[in-house]
Image (tube, rainbow, N blue to C red):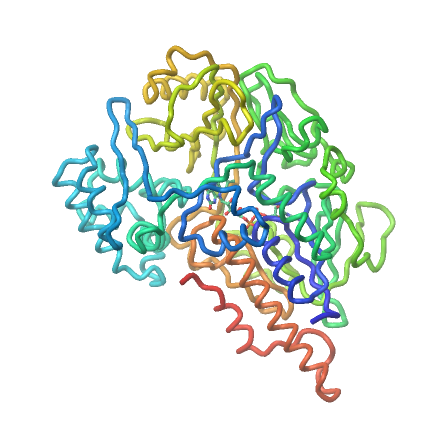
Length: 568
Ligand SMILES: Cc1cc2nc3c(=O)[nH]c(=O)nc-3n(C[C@H](O)[C@H](O)[C@H](O)COP(=O)(O)OP(=O)(O)OC[C@H]3O[C@@H](n4cnc5c(N)ncnc54)[C@H](O)[C@@H]3O)c2cc1C
């Protein structure tokens, strides 16, 4: 293992987890990340001196793999988890509270449901019956993968009101798809694991520092300490098997592939460095993008304020701008050097690897995979994507004391107080998180402003007297894969049919929705798969001259690897 070189492509939570795990196990690790920072779909940027997350991220106490990663990164103290699951639900006309009791699960939620005033008593009873049915559903069954949640709930007496005022609250935000269109298997996983499982499973956790610090910077520091070779602004453009039983990964500099995502965001430390963040003031075009690629139009921060339009950086030069010492220390640091530097950046350079982990979004993995993976890759690409939009509003005064709230009968799905996390000294900063945001993702910022400021005033009457000092929008066009009926059949395990080529990412078959927990689990599974395959290769090397050097995992080894790390 020690002499083996693993290239991890993609520095999101999946790739970071795999890289840490493998480096700790003694492998030589090169991590390639196309963008100028680590953290993938969880990142932050600077605006007006504030640290802004690309989108609110929450987790639950039951997200054990993610919380373990936080501990390894040394940032457990930078998140806060509720003592008890406790959600205030606001509507234009009223308020309810869903707070669990100390009873063992699933009874811990019974009182909260019994008191949920946005549903009639009869409706609450029907919800309890349907929830119980879901508790006994097996998410792994193919018929649940094929089923549509609206149909499944409808068949169990869940009327429109119950679906919109209760089920949607949890399903839309966790599966990032309109509640009725969701995959029943994944919905059952969420409901069973979080709401009907251990009594503390659904206690909600939120970061208290910007995401870019929580994940990207902390991981860069750890990987630096571990001696991994982290290359930022290094975009893999192909992965090909080579004659020696390993792989050649072709890399170009320049962060012009955002891996199918649209963060439009740079690290918070870049406040004055001006890398990569495009803040598009009054323009309604999706204009702000990263790196000037054809994808760039997809990224963007569309503000209706008169924020200056920041420059968009492209190419590897961007990696240096405004990065912290930690980043500079790890980026492109010592470690494996390309075997051959080809002339011209277009051709790129080739890095040789004994094993490769593709920890990029599904469509990118499908593009990068060697030709003999074409049939499987077509299935991965078939997963599709779904957008998330965040509407950011800064008031000149406090308008609510709630740390967060859910909305019903309102376009506001969930709203979070980001004041302290962002570093705002006076006033209040609220972020409205809009999942399954197909209707909003192309909507001009001015129209979003016209819709969401009044909606917030309905939920928080104090906002009527407040002045809005800033308003802007972050759009993640490909925030998650589309967690619709049939998606389970398209999600691959970690092992591929090609020895040494392994997949990671929240889109792979983790059994979990596309979440931080799923991403971390996939990274652990991928690292285990690589370890198994490298161990088999070592055994083959050690044996008589029978097998060629390289990775020679047996089929049973690989099957076991693929099964490893399934959610408990
Ligand atoms: C706005 C938003 C809100 C969310 N809210 C939540 C939430 O509340 N709770 C939750 O649990 N989850 C949430 N998620 C989902 C969660 O962020 C993802 O599931 C998780 O971060 C995915 O991690 P990943 O490593 O699988 O993929 P990614 O984070 O997408 O990482 C892939 C990485 O690969 C890089 N890459 C792509 N192509 C290349 C290439 N050719 N060469 C090199 N590198 C490449 C990309 O730049 C990226 O860094 C949210 C997502 C978004 C976008």
